[in-house]
Image (tube, rainbow, N blue to C red):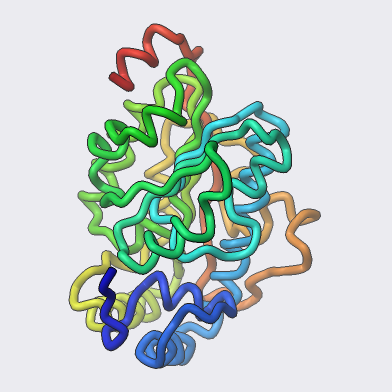
Length: 274
């Protein structure tokens, strides 16, 4: 495995904001620049990570979901998806997807703790390759509700990429599937412009943009929204948020979860997944 420690990485930046140790000086410097523009970035990252744990638990415990596909999983952190889901039901199955070499290496070393967990090295936009992967075909079974997770991922992609990716995943999930999405957002156009410019320069153009909440709402249009609705994820079932909240309003983690309407059918699912 080779990774460039001299070029900032979005995954390593997120790790630094969460208080992790799998990051390097270039990542740390961009994060400090980000905090100068949007001091709420660290709190937003932490509320976002806490939301991931809560939403997986709710989907597993209250909606019977036993299959999770996390797109852009990032570096392992506390309460990873399989740990949360398998606390509810040890038979729950989780596939992590990422194409950052460092992330894939760490994920395979630290997350694949049993035969019901796997890591797929793929671009999150390549839906066909992801669903055709042997690990996905083994663990994500047709006819059972599946939750596709896009937690703090879409900001790294362009608008057309995001819209097309979400539509492809909806087609794969079919009725009864669940979609979870969050993004860092800002109501302030100056903050959005400055953060976007900083991240595009830091990643040599491998970034989309900081969006408005309505952009995220559009991605979840047509779904039956579950839980308390869409919004600042610090408020998504806040009694379970363990005291973490992004008070700084110039940048928040915004999103939620929804179910694709209609009844799922094993035969229909089999045709989609084949």
